[in-house]
Amino acid sequence: MLPEALARQIITDHSQHPRGRGEIAGVPHATRENPGCGDQVTVWARVEGGRLLEVRFTGRGCAISQASASLMTQALAGKGLEEARALAARYRAMVMGEAPPDLALGDLVALEGVSRLHARRKCALLAWQALEAALAGPHE
Image (cartoon, rainbow, N blue to C red; front, side, top):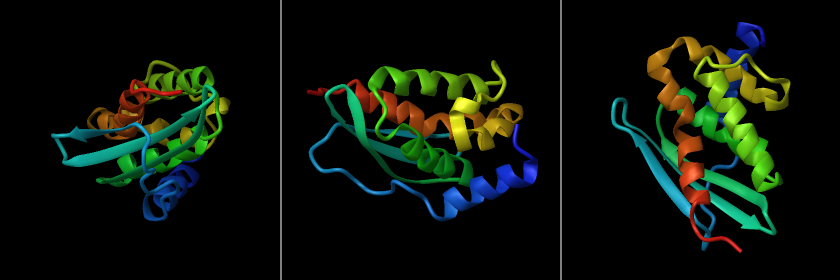
């Protein structure tokens, strides 16, 4: 677990200066919305040879949803699909309070505190749900 001040700093940095923002033409994408708060995230996933070569997003919403999407693009780019799905499962378990923070999550552990904020869990998982839907699309 990261110190609270460091976690807050990572979340603020990624929400104010998101990495991986933008579209990728001609690749599968999916949009997910949180009707409870109005957050919306669209995720694009370029997959070649069973690897996530690039993950990008657009959207609007709270600091948690935008930081989660930004951190996700960095954590998953270049990973094999199975490795990416395993990392996503570990992240989801942490956010849901079902598992402790995992060092394999890197800076994603900054969002561990969301597990205690039930209403914010959906915000932290929104981009990941969009990615899952995008990956269900056709790939090479």
